[in-house]
Length: 104
Image 1 (cartoon, rainbow, N blue to C red):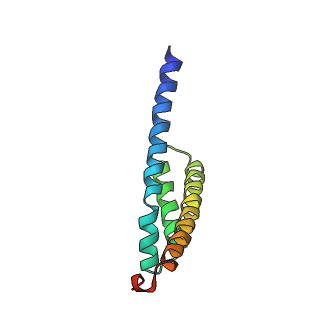
Image 2: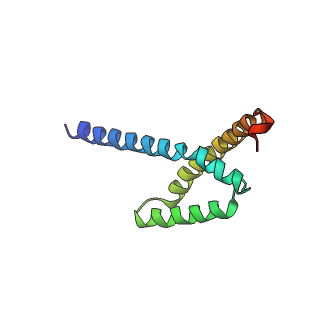
Image 3: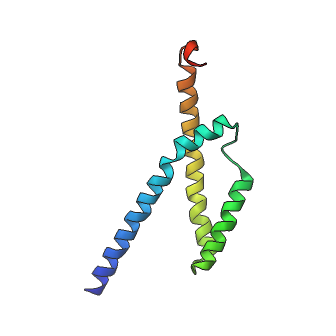
């Protein structure tokens, strides 16, 4: 049946999207560490603006609705920032609980 095949293909693509999101979120601890070491804020408006401009161009190249792509990545970026804040707080707690000799 044609619809069954198409639905199976969509399910495979959805799994790939989930896997790619997982890979993106697995980078958060490294990102937090670098931002902390370089004294960078979690939210960097210039970087975010560059990303959205890039996503808009890609959406147009691939024949996608730029507003949809913007909204999709806005959700992803919001969650990335939330997770970065959580990881940053948790890393700060770990660092604060270390004995003085290990903080050097």
